[in-house]
Image (cartoon, rainbow, N blue to C red; front, side):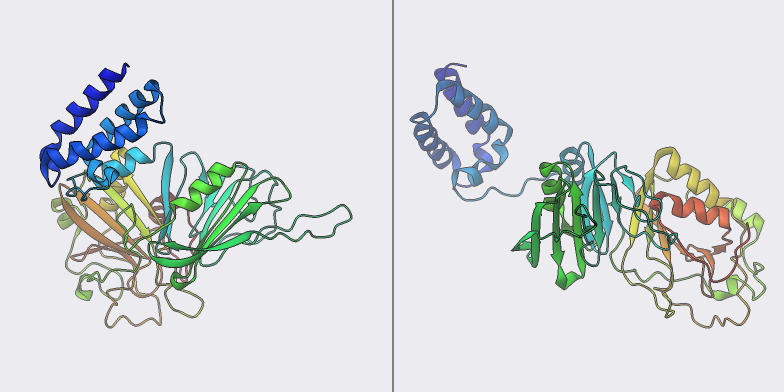
Length: 390
């Protein structure tokens, strides 16, 4: 591109966007001409041509680039921008934080019987208890309450080698944090970001410095994650207890009712599975989102069909458990079933008194196979205090 062509392209580009900037064409084109003049003195003609193309792509934010008054916020599809910016990568969330990882990475392939495949580890839930050494070439990213310890490498003779990563103070979304980075004796590039005020940390170990840095850079704090799941459980009113007798038999909703009105929309646009974890050993709920997944297309339709095929009435109340006033926050997973702009929230419980599925108007029965189908996409373990039917 000649110098004359580059200048023409710049001028035409800015004039076509002058109405979008405060102050009109005079301020905008003047600032840009001054900037181009400075650049011309230190750039070749080919470099000016490349700069013209780059500015064309970013023409909507020229005032910010040139130091003038900021442009009015454009009307953009944030979700579309998010998808476009993460081609080949995907979001994973837990505990009110999200990170991007390569799209081909597995989930929760760590600990007992881990393989050498790259993986992200978050919200694993109960897992088998055994020890498997972490392969020295394995790539991992952890989202947890605290940094994941680097496995101590061994010198010949069995002596552990101390691993220290250089730390510095940073901020994540305006919240103070500590970031540490360095290279491990096994050759991998490691890093952590710890946000103590939010009780969350990301730890990364990969074979490529740029990959480790990109994952650490992607950390963001959220109240609602990419799947639409809230960090803290929402208050979701349960169906009236009269919906189910103490024996577990339906009292107001029959199989005929179920055929007339599906439990959830039959062809949803998406279903998000929000897992908040089982009861703790002290009988309390963990209180934060552990993991999430969003199903679309055939996967969402298949899960909706399984939910609609469930036996109406909910599960029997376990012996010795009293159900007086169900807790609106008291569920272990929440399904967000979306259809034509509407959203049906389905509480899922496999422990406690109100076991089963609950859409706020009626209940259906939860089985082991249905629970596996619901929780399969989030790839987390779960524990049962009372047996469920198969």
